[in-house]
Each structure stands twice: as C-alpha cells, then as structure tokens.
Length: 334
Image 1 (tube, one colour):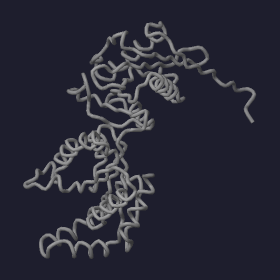
Image 2: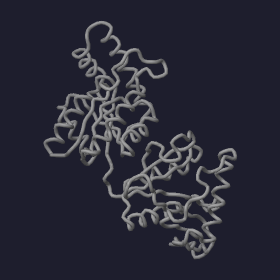
Image 3: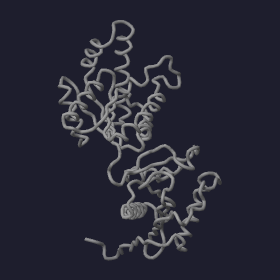
C-alpha cells in the first residue's frame, strides 16, 4: 500500500520552441557546469543554429523545470541522421530517471521525422552521461565533425531502426578453440542463409618486431578492422564473427568504433588445461613455440578469468565445434 502521507511528484515532458525561456535558462546552466568540469574551457559549439534544431524538450517536476535536451539535424553527415544536443538535468533532480525520459522523447520525435540514426558527443569527465547513453544502446563511434581532434570528447551513436552492425568476438586463452568455433559459426550462418563475415583477427597483426608498448599489435588490429568494416557494411554484411583474445577493458569500445558503432558481444570459450595442452601440442611446433604456448595458455586463462569482460562464457571441452558454435549463436539470437 502507498503511504497516504507521501505525494507522487508530477513529472511532465514538454516540447517547446528552441528559444523558450525555460530551455534557454537550462542550457546556460549546462554550459556553466561544463566549463567548471573542463577547467574553464568553453563548448566547441556554444551557439547552435536555430534553423537546424528539430525539437526541444523540457522536463518539469511539480511545475519546476528540471532538465532539457534537443534534437538537431545532423547536416553534412548522412541522410537520416540526427544529433542529440544540450542534454542536461539540474543537480537537485538527478538520479530520478529524468534524463531517460528526455532521451526517449527525443528518440520518438526523431523516428517521427524519419531519422534512422542519432549521434552525440559527450566528454571524458562526464561518466554519468556515458553510463546513460551506453545503457540506452548508444555505442562508441570515431569522433565526428568538430570533435575529431578533441581529446576530451567521446562520441556515440544508435541506430533507431535496428539496422546497425552486430559483432561477436569469440574470446579465450590459447587452445580454447576460438578459431575453430568461429569458423563453425560461419558454416552454420551460411547454412541458415544469414549474410555475414568472419575474420580470424590474428591474421591482421602477424608482424615483427612489435613494440614493448603494443606487444600484440592491437593498434594494427583495429586499423585493419576499421578499413574492412565499411566494405562489409556497404555490401550488406551486418553480422560479423571475430576470433581474438580480449584482455583489455577498452577493447570493447575499440571494436565498436572500428565497426562504426556496432553492438559488440564478447563470448569466452573455456576449456580445461589438459584439453588446451593437447590442442596446442598438435598445433605448435616442438621446442620454443610449444613451450611459449603452454606457458601463455595458463597465464592468459588466469588473466581472462580475473578480468571477467565477457557477456557469456561457453564450455568447449570434448564437444563438437558445431555444437559449441550453435550454442553461441543461440545466445546471440542469430
């Protein structure tokens, strides 16, 4: 039962003109707060062209303005793309889900106006904003427009029509079966007539020497994938299977960026040490390479278990690769 002494606040989400006095006041507050967070540095675009603003939203609580947001026509990017601007909730009203209400209303307005995708920029010193956008389905993209050279800026995007690329990274220590299972996933997708691409990512970084700062040539990996991704998308391959170890928390967003804001799922394969050793013995030449692999498989298994970066973990002990592949595809809903 509700407490008769407690009143439920009245929350209203209103669409207003860009020059509405309440919205303007909130935007001024937002700009002042951002300047304080970024050591007095002003917004790159302090003045937005009114003719580009497609919708402005204000949220109020018991009649008091609490937050705002706006939708902008993202001219110069691509048809069907809009941009979120001036998302802000006043400090006393935070933690109540108001920013989600504003975001949902702006997305609804975007769909009404035929937009397929929304872009946004936020800052590295705004973790609460990043958390909001990620939880709402926005994924990292390369910095765009005026933010390309801005180290403090991070950009995100979301496909409103569900047509974005989906990527699965098959993770696991040496000998866990990443490449074998990824190949079997491709076979199953082909049999199901699902357009897709698959890449054994290790093939993109077989170079020598590598640097101490980047011993596994990750920078080369993401350059290669970023070059490949537009061609896959242009030809309709919106499902991509990758086989590659994921041992850096930042790699998820790097994969998202490489594939222009893809939804990325990381699935780790797990196999007992003796199974991995048997596979590595059959695969690696005796001597240096086997010794390196035996040591690395133990070290890496401990690292991956401790990091726990995966969306799912699937056992790959003594099972046919197609069976494991089918389980992973089932988890993905592919």
